Image (cartoon, rainbow, N blue to C red; front, side, top):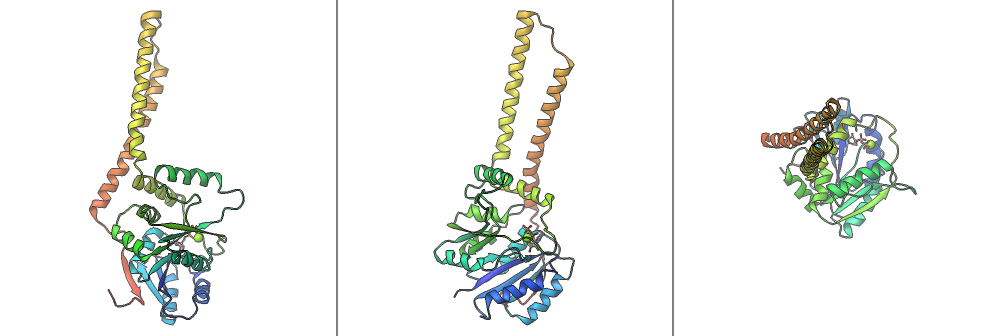
Length: 309
Ligand code: UDP
Ligand code: MG
């Protein structure tokens, strides 16, 4: 059996970790060389790191990577991928929402020859919810064509994919986007996600917004292309309106319309311009951020890592 690295991003999960580890141990059995568990402590402010350190003294398969502060679960996953040595890596949140048995089903698909296996939430009979349908429909149409229609909760990657992802070193991106973009063959496995029993979801609206913008700006030229299209449409409308006014004035001696129409045009057009500047700013800022070459995360300490690096 080849070694599989299980990557577990952890951010303030002290209430979940003991039970999570118990389940992980039951799942993985006692075999020393089928699994390694890479916990990435994403700057937790609670006792998570302490708990992980204790667990690591009891189980030699546990490796802990501690980041210097909270960098977000994508950076944490990347840190996990970089620290992994398995033939394949699978991501697994520590909040007990996702059944570990899924790893077996994903491994089976991997052995069938798929380099990427996604764990996706079952949607039930009615299919994905409206918002989800619109969001992932947009992503599929404008950015990443091979995005599963229900989104992705977990990923299982062959070593070849892992090596590609960690060599990219792109910032302000989505790790899922990079995986999809890499274009290796992909399969999906549907499963039932349990509700979170302890702690709170760390997905704030601000983080969701950031991911949304990152996805479209990093993997699609739609935003910057739409600027030109909107600009063209607005100037065309302006041009038509000018002809309308001139014709009215010359043929029908209409009085030239005043304040209201001017004001509306001024507000609409300056609003559009502001939005365009914002979109351009997104690209400019990314360029700036990329050129500063700051790392996506900083490792503060590690526990139980092999001495290879
Ligand atoms: N997580 C993390 N850093 C963050 C946010 C979340 O490492 O900034 C971890 C979190 O501890 C959990 C996993 O990522 O193990 C999934 O997070 P969460 O349960 O909040 O996401 P959801 O299940 O709501 O998608
Ligand atoms: Mg969760």
